Length: 411
Image 1: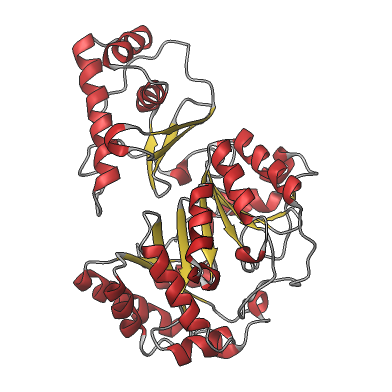
Image 2: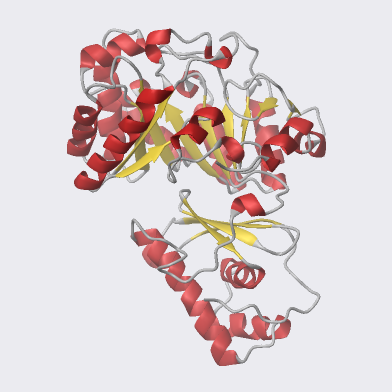
């Protein structure tokens, strides 16, 4: 465990610091977000997060600044009452943590690595850690968003301004979503701009356009860090029935195979509904046989917020809990990582599963920007918080609705 030494007045300036590793971990993206109180969060390879106390944040900042072992020890001794030997030992411990996180799955950073745990829900944050950018609400399959698919869209230069603002705010991670983001002709330009800004970028897609390997490789060359592809079933007839497009399964699966073959982290998501729930384990088997190590599922509960969704694509609350338990058990047998997410908090509370996160991440670690720049807590939430380009960030972040969501207790 890293010790908390007496700290002298000086501390790291708050903000976002970025580094791509060299040597053994060539290209591995590391982002350090430092809060006003000097604590921080380290995001490793766009997918793993370590919450850091002030001492650990100081060490990581020096590492990202390119300091060698001797230089780190010298700087640490200026700020903390610690001898050189201890400073070097703690520095090596942190490098071990980064290396372990980069190479190993299924690690508990608290119990296994001895890192002090700082819960994100206990911290006062100045901005979220991740922002969903719905760059269009146009779709290439059935997709159900809360508003018109013809909503006006920010142009390329306006999205550049959004990305610049997020970088200034210290948001290290953006995900291009929709709608179907690959319908934007400038997606590669937006990904490239994110990469040049030093942020991590992800893509949520039907995967149909990724069947074209040249298009996929172009996005990766632009700087894309991770991909999530929607696979509704192992059965092409069920998948095509859900998407509403004959032949979409074949295109999606080819896109998925192409993505798996690249070095880019790839995951799938399946919206469990009345069409595919019965054979969900066969779908997991199918994904496992393709070589995937991790998959995600979600569901839609019929409510006023989802009244535009056909009822056959929704599930009742009573059927969700046994499904999740069954999926968890089967994924463990296969050695796969399973992620579950559904934003509707009243459902998650009723499940009482530790693995399921409530929507307290909305307005805290995550936010969502619509095609016209409107900021909302998450997709399908009807209340706007403001516009990312025209409204002051403090007004958006401290919107009464955001404060209410942040103060809500977890189930």
